[in-house]
Length: 336
Length: 149
Image (cartoon, rainbow over all chains, first blue to last red; front, side):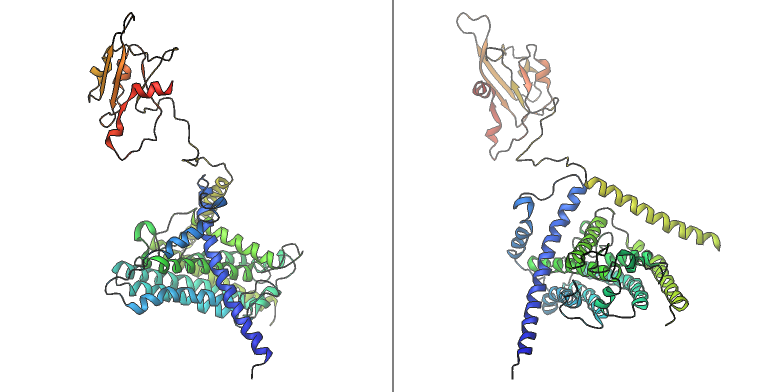
């Protein structure tokens, strides 16, 4: 029997799929526009202005260009994996959005293990890039893919250490509850929660750096490195196959910024305790996105050794210190 | 033991500080005015010393100042200037009947302008030259200057 509950559930599912696909695509499109606008302002030029007013239709033009290109498959490529990889790189991104609470009311599915889910699917993306590189049957793609894996594993460690120390404080994996605990002004936000751990601002910085590395953004963009590696693991992809990797990059940035907002910046809470809601979440999230672009266009790309040294010699020790300090302070001040 | 520890932390603090310096530079540049122009729609005025192809100069009456002394033709190392003149009935001096410049071989050395004792040629400020045909650069400068006036 079909009950009204089941229909509601189905409608919810469809709305979720349509809504988040739209959200992801629009974000990818307009972040890519901002990716060209913001650096052009840094470089004292206007950026794209020809297509549409203020260049607003530029992403549409880019999309049409990508769609109209022939999709080539290199000789000797693993056909199934080659076609599967762009899909696999987008799907985890969309899945992660399931449990992100955008405001008190807007969340597709509020899991108790939301945070865990986001990070487990987040780790899945690197697998798709590896497959893309390997399936291309191109040694440069394979080398680039290997570099991606080394980089992602190196940065997964400090990121998860920071998140674990945060979970010590919040005592929950539920993203909605984590935000609820931070309500009531910016001094309640986890980034300034010095009572829980003196190193919280540092933890936020580590999270942000790791997020840049995890999403393969400059100065850690070893995946792409246009000037040296052509397009790294994506070299053999053309048309929308490449476009999907592009979309996935921006979806990952959005998720990283969402999680950063939720974990450290109080989610939809207003800094001054006034009118909390969706708008505050979006303001904080896009401010973080802006910082991501800002960082990209401020610093040169690091060397691969520098990148691994940063992770293993600086970020991981600091994340571990943060973990120990948090545990110590919790034992000392908040007898559980 | 202690010294490498100190340098380790010093390097980190210094590194983070320099990162913020870099970010400050970019963000202050963001607020500055653009220095570029949207080229096909706007263009900059050419600087006075810009060397385009040569152009004939006219006197107040709108006639070319050239007296057909042939100095420019002789001075041109690549032989790209060809001019001819005739003395009209009752006129005090010769006047131009043709002046062609083969811009395909011109190297913009400027010897013609320098050799001219009558201040009759100058560099134009043309920089938007583009054509699919070689013959478009065999320019009739006399026609060009008469059309202008």
